[in-house]
Length: 264
View 1 (tube, rainbow, N blue to C red):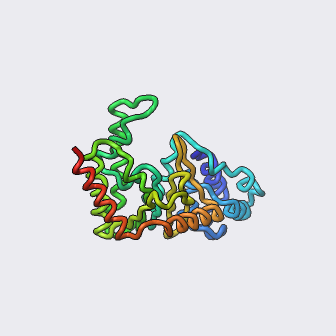
View 2 (view 1 turned 90 degrees about the vertical axis):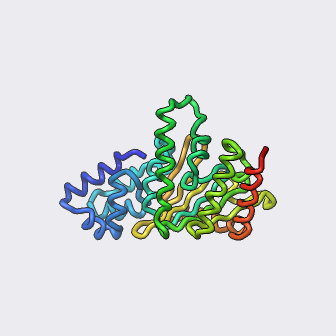
View 3 (view 1 turned 120 degrees about the vertical axis):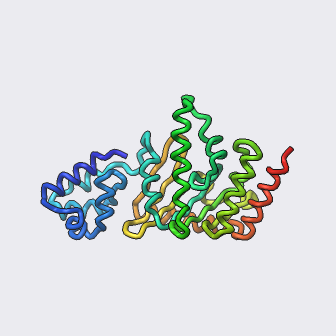
């Protein structure tokens, strides 16, 4: 995400002799939201941009030159990764791969090994460290609340060896049994469901508006438009209604891990 917009906002704020808190008070926003915009981690909604223009006396400059929050960028996940660490609740849907936060080392290695152009061993190791660091967000016993909605394809897709799959699914079961996460599986029998088109992560915060993150092949999109985020939240809830119960989901994960473990 380009930070030109955030840098310009900061310059205008400083020129007006305002602290982040003072600008936040004038624009009816939180200080942390202002900080995220200036750092390039967030893009304000159109209404936020209009309030910033009024507070800073910048006409309609901030409203007119909003970056495209749907643009795909080379470091498309970096902003989402930073926000993930600040969230108090994460609701994630996985279509074909285990969510990064839940991946074991063996599974992550299998996911990160292939790529084009081919990665060097050093680059692969760097990506692996970053992936495993994400899992530390669950070391706190309560925050964030984490709900994983998994398409059954996540369980059935053979990633790495059978041993890797058994270990990965067992790891998810243990987290769920300790009530550290909630996990639900959308079985193949459901057929079409409203999230079938791709991965989705919904993040909620104490002091800023919620955001949504969607990802495709070599591209990702952060969305903080209130209307769009609300629509995606409802879509997630609709799909969750078709999922197996928590108890049934854990049983299916455990049985599938056992099948992998018994593989000859």
